[in-house]
Length: 172
Picture (tube, rainbow, N blue to C red):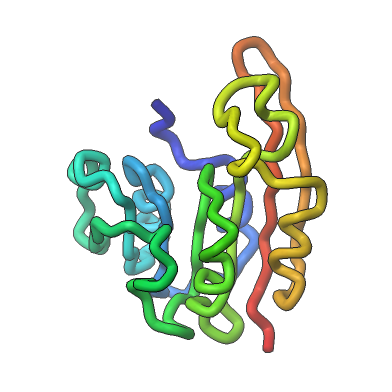
């Protein structure tokens, strides 16, 4: 189980101006590792996941937890233009990507990090539908302003992964 905030998320948070009490979304938050980091930045955090047990595993006063199936894009539970910051790590559903982008306020940010092709040879996830193709994340965010992007392969001891990462801004 991963219980520390993503290093990518930490780096991105150090690079963007995060206003006190900014409204942030941690989508598919799992056990809340990134939600807790956002709370430390004094963000008001909406943490969404389908797994109620994961949601019950963490608490902070400025975190609101919502148990829902975000993959049902027809019943997207969030309003447009609401979040100053959206974070998604280790989760991919291409069908809801437009919903994610439309939830970001003008001048708001998207931090996204998930697995890329080739990961199936290193560990989970093995299913290719959960793996980004080369440059796919750039394509999915093409109408957002690119700040940082990388496709990385890490093989160090027991740590093995291929990830695609992006920080971009909704600068309409």
